[in-house]
Picture (cartoon, rainbow, N blue to C red):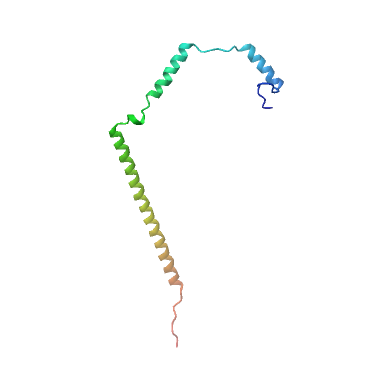
Length: 113
């Protein structure tokens, strides 16, 4: 199907023209009741007015958020250092294991008469 839209002087497929004509004759435009629009506007405004703004945060909430952020940063640093120490230990053990394996493979020189 072609992507034709009924705007201005654009060409419309006959199938769409038939459908458009049928819809125009069977459906009439409606406008909402003014009290419905007013109630809907009140509901939408009421939903946004319930959201707390940043200036409405109490001092205790601000202190709690700050404490939480500081705690998160401390934990992040702690676990990063712990991960680094673990990786360094693992690489050290691997290096020692390979070194010992290499020492065992080297033949010892003996003097024979």
